[in-house]
Length: 276
Image (cartoon, rainbow, N blue to C red; front, top):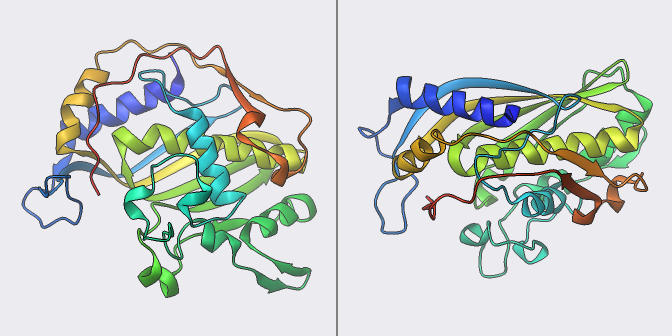
């Protein structure tokens, strides 16, 4: 089976069997009908994916790979905070009348700072250090800027990435404060696996391990039945990721630069309610 499926199934079984419900606490998220969206959770889950072994994508249900890549490029490459620059509607509920999600996600990555080597934003600093300072233990990004939280329509969930070069291998630690296991786990894992491939390619490195640290890994109350149905499915083998060999510039990648070869997946589960 796909290793991403194996990890997802183990996490969900652990949450359902040993998790803690927050039904006795006031919660921010709501369902479309206004009902509080409660969760069962486990604290401090850590998953490791070796990209040298396989591409981590779930097969338990068909994943929207192209939309996930498009959102990744929207944040990391276009550094946008406006949904009009995005080709899916996943952020619509968080945008204002002008399409902005405030000073969140891509906005934070695009803020320039003055360094001894010149003016750079967070992404360009990473690109510079991977090429010029690969032994550095300071190659990281952070979206959780406390000075701007009041101007964010949603606080960042996947909020920091620490990059580490070991030999000629590029590894990364993705820190996530909150993870909706059903709707976001597979999405974020395949996104940041693609990002690791992108950065390794343009830096002359080999993509290695993606370590995913989740502070609050949870399943919403109205998602439990869907997760239980997924637990009964038999996963397929992982597909291979094709990355356009002609692209050597980080800012030249497009959604067409990536393709899954041999991807087999189960049909989507029943419509999944979204808590906002």
